[in-house]
Length: 381
Image 1: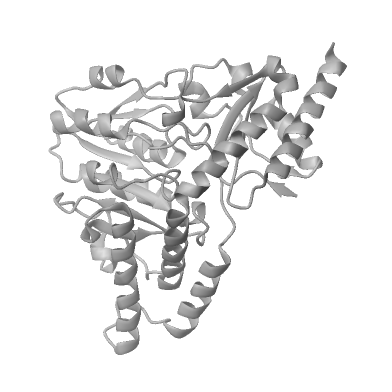
Image 2 (image 1 turned 90 degrees about the vertical axis):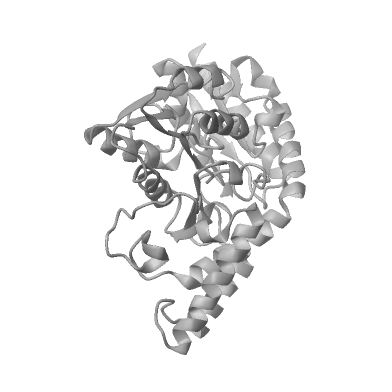
């Protein structure tokens, strides 16, 4: 099986796995324990916090370890809103946000908040004029994902941050798809909070972190909690966090080289499926706003689920969108944000590259998809 679903999850890096085993066996103490074994674990934890903060140019005192992006998104939103007056009860987001964002906002709507959901342009980008027009005196928070997980569109974080600053609005961004793949040093300090996840960057599953600007005096959603300065309960998974940090150091060091590789692989794939281009619609932004490792496309007249299953049968793992949407009968939120009709939305598939992906594998995938499409079209015409 050749894997083309790296946007869903990545295999654990071998070196990160070795780090995990070393720390889990030699530095197993509870980082909150006061004895020397606990202090050793606490020292490792703080070294990771400092290193990860340095990688993205933020104050380490605002970085907290979590179980992943979903928990980080929830904790960030709750922490930011805990600082606002009751009258500030309006939130702006996009239709295409991750399910963890939508879940948190649906809960808040039941608590009296109102939420404005913005659509995408045809390139998958937020319309800044529509975002500005959605502002109200009671707007407290704007939350926009940095990179869309299904089409790879990169949102204009700097411009959105300017709007938020000018209107005294807090700004959360889901960095799960951009962390380790883009240079975040320019944008990370501009947001009020952001989240990222270890398993997207070849680290262990069940790891991640959230950054909340230290100047924001948040209140914990979990009263009485002592871990991570009270942000979340539970014994901190130090071995996994150290492994995630090792993986982060590695992927960020190789990010520039990886981007060039993914741009090349993207072009190879597009060229390989050119025989069926009359039926293919690649949903992408301009190159400066497009993560090259994610290709989202529809093929006219063929449901994405059918194509995914046929690829799977022939030894290729692709997806029909975010893994968090699997099992739902409705098309993904990204397709809804793009304004695609129901039938066209169901034609969507996603292909995503990783560090082990080769040109030969991409060519084989392109040829396989071309053959599948041609065979299906022959049956219908």
